[in-house]
Image 1 (tube, rainbow, N blue to C red):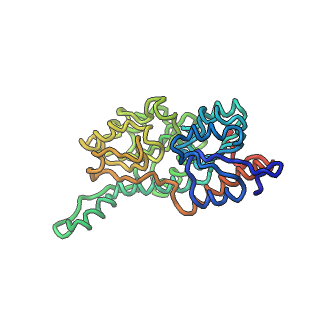
Image 2: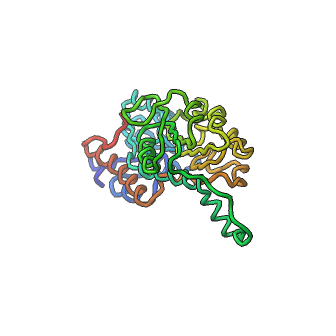
Image 3: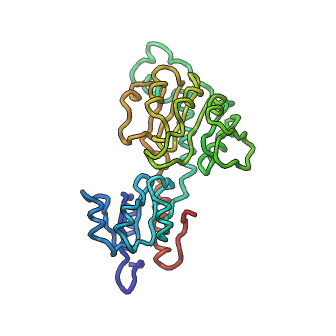
Length: 319
């Protein structure tokens, strides 16, 4: 094992599940403890205590204060993803613990945002069901909407939002955005999300947010109502950043035109009312789930831990 000190392998706690290829690669360098799979993960960490010098998690299972309290020698936590809502970043910085992410997934997330927008516009999943059910034998489905030339609003113009915007440019969309930081871009900066929604035909949520339950939704009922009965909403961020009950109600009542959703408030549980609606396309949080990106993310996790314990520093630490 390369991650060793004084002949003893460095011990790593897996606080979130990793793909088999990532686990196999980590095992070539470190001694792993699959604490996330234990009936009581915190008790497992307590038993390991100061033996643990590194950890690996993912965007939905980050590094929390209670983890750090049990791991006095923890130096680094590699997150398989870019979401930090479940990690106590401030506490990690206070303790001198490095957190790394895998900034290799932006293309895939942006690609899926466009796929969801196209599906919601052109009713592709609904059309698939229409054909499979035999309904085509009895008539034509209702028409869809044209994505090309739409007014597209983006909530969040960070790395993912920027990639979504670049793809929307190819559809000759007029683009505007809200973001806490004005960007050096050609798109129109709007300061009020309700105003942006009222202007938009398509609204994409691509923003980072606060941990679940710590702040109101970024996309509330007022924004969804402003988007209106012909508006299309796409979410590739986090489910809890949207007022999900209002979203479901408006989709069912016709107050919102359509939606493409990859994330939900209580995954993997999805509101039953959504399952019966034809004006929404649902995917199971797969925005970064391609063979190529999954491999690259795993390699980044491994690379960060190997580099750190080789004394070369982390490869992709957060600021």
